[in-house]
Length: 360
Image (tube, rainbow, N blue to C red; front, side, top):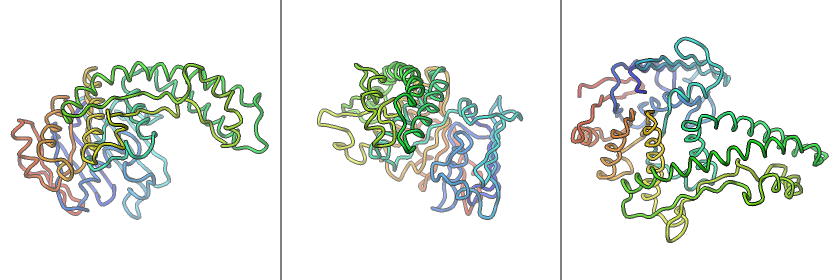
């Protein structure tokens, strides 16, 4: 799905932005602080319901304003979102209100590629698990329901574990049963998806890091030989002591290994960035194989990647049918890449919260 129109109101310093005639690649350039990354942030808000810069709505809603509004249109659908400073939101698809952000996210798959960030490798298992679950959400139809049931049971069990006096095994038993039931479903789904993901990952890793051998391992978060029920029962005492559930799919991870050791320990910062990019490209490729195009936010392309890596990344995104919204300080080199690759693009100059379309 490609967007043809984008309207943004009251997101940071963007008072009113109206963009039409969007292309497969849309390039926003301007000085730091001009508002170009805020355009990407607004698209991220629309597709996911959250910012990639802050968890607090009042930090991205324009100063002294009560809300922000983002509207987008594709050839077949219209999407609208109002984010309130109170944290509430109103979402509409084709004029009809929808209840959950997940319904909109399903229609508008989005990947954010930040070449400056190595968080996925350096900040524990959570960002890697989130990456896996993004893929699960978009390619496994039964995943979201199982994940919701599991998450609700986990929340209730953890709430009981925080109570005093400590809950008995009998009190926890109903929640344990639900965790086991839906946890095993999630585990089997993840095994199948990771096996498929591996094939695409190998291809995109070779595209960006041709001389590097990296293996992807799925870690389920519990001892599969014994089963989740066994782990919950045998670690009851530890869960009581730590007041949280230590075993289950919510502790799953994706480990990345080189012949010399863990990728996060062995690779250089530049290699880590390309590895993370390869992971995301492989997910986009997996959706593309299912005839689903991904909207990609590419922040500050020229800041971290060398010219060769920049061109390889842009070429691959074009091959995968992605619609790209990207920011840069050096639009001349980006224009050169896109022209050499024969990719259709639209250039926008961002100045003090105003976005101007530039003739290509």
